[in-house]
Length: 226
Length: 226
Image (tube, rainbow over all chains, first blue to last red; front, side):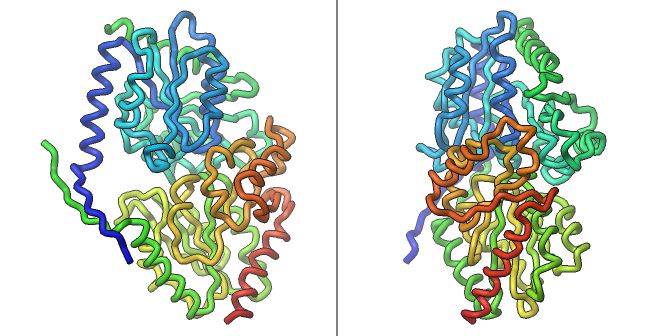
């Protein structure tokens, strides 16, 4: 026997957009630059954050951590003495595979916005849905690990198109992979011409200073505009 | 101005279950064993299929290929002279991040079920949603690449719990990673005690014979039961 559920949906994405705008207004009022960080599971979002959040030259950074279950990433980042707020999507949000504007809004009261210059929102590890839901961010950054193969931009173009910066991570592993970095970069260019990209390795440190500079510039631009 | 959409949803998951049962009945009638293959993007599903589908000792195999966009994987597999049918979720299914029973059902007329013993359904690369939607399969296999880190089972437990077999892939890269294989296997065991698992490398061939045997046994069991 099937339960009947009637749901009235005011266009989900339109509603999300409205809440995202409200979030954005709150961020702007508080003078906080917000970066939405997205990738597949295990592409290295948390590690790439760990590498930079401690050394941003006086820019006060906080992290909003989205996970389906568990607080492992939040604990890793909290150990670096930055304010971390966790959204566990399995609790109250039905194990959603992405963050949406409403989830972020529900976390705002726990965020010390007035004490921050930069907020990084680490999205749920998923290469599809997070790209469809704006959460009020100023910029989107995606991490694409070379271990995922060089054809990923062609198979999951939306996230590449939606991002202002593509971090091509784990380049230290290239000698051990059948992956062509030039082809990967050409595929990124083909789905999002002109997008900024950085080849990085959280392990060797390659590109990390550039990634840190990018975040610093993003936060400073907003400070200057405020 | 918001468009108003009213959707009547007969519990989405219940409805999916009903269609999945109909698919399963069709598969059983045709004597086809169906395996639902799931993983993160780039964990190696297609490559692990390429390694085995050509050499299954007389077991006739077909592939149903789920992708958000593009036919790259389908082309790779078709070049091995196995019947491949493609479901592109961006066309007609709104870019869904998983296959559901209805998408599979819509592809059935293009599948030569009567000429197959084994059908492998390669799901969309996503570690969250595919685990929630049965499609009529007899078994679920997930691929977890060691490059994704050893804590993945704790962060995305549902897919590990839903699978009959966990393929721990890319073990050839372990010497180059800060990943503890023992800890990864212990985490798999903690979220799904007793689940079968194989450490494999599509590159070196490690574990590939065992993976092939597993598929062969799965198909033969069904043939014997028919």
